[in-house]
Image 1 (cartoon, rainbow, N blue to C red):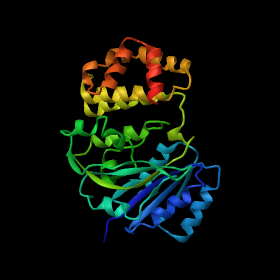
Image 2 (image 1 turned 45 degrees about the horizontal axis):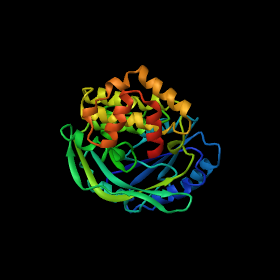
Image 3 (image 1 turned 45 degrees about the vertical axis):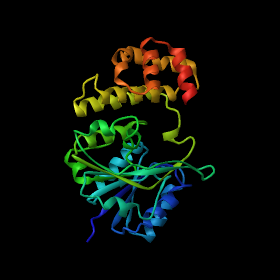
Length: 317
């Protein structure tokens, strides 16, 4: 018999979308699945919608909890999963009917990574597809190959991937209670515990872009959260500060914080002051970057030219 796959779906006020999400999962050609829907204190009719689906298909298991965030909802799913493998699907997204089948073809690898299609929920038009080149990577020797500007965006999210639950449980991996970056930190820790990755040129995960949702909205304490990503990577992989990976991750966290603050120059300046207090200008090494735009940004940061940084980021954002 085929191995059981646990699909974890965190849900918070997704009454408009959770039905389509669950339908796409139930329509999988790979039938030996369980769906763990974690209602994270929804205040709309999400719970009732899930209950209606669960009445018709006993593969759906509903768990209720007070609102604690997407990370804690995923943790609840991990705790209750009975499958050998785990997939994460957000409640406002969908998966193609051959999604589980295609990822499970490579279940002998510690991590299977596929592509993603981004669709605007407003007009239903495709905004972007990330299609990956087929490759097999082995860690830690191939770490720089995946933690760089071109490859890292897909490795910063837990969706589009097949995880081995025994590895997650062996090392007691879980999501931190953050509003931003919990995916990236979980992925980095998982990567630090595994040996093999299979990257496949398949796109079966449909990410619906919804303006105003947590992943696409503004955060007030963005730097306090994004700075944890390079800090945790340094810890997990024993990185040197001047290593290419650490330099890439810290500049990426800086960029994310800046991009979150371009609507208000005063907030932008305050973010930069927080970075100065933590010696970010001194930590960044101009020679550690290949892209010209990154070299320019690092130079501006090292010379504390805040207004020019603001203009540059606002132009590129």
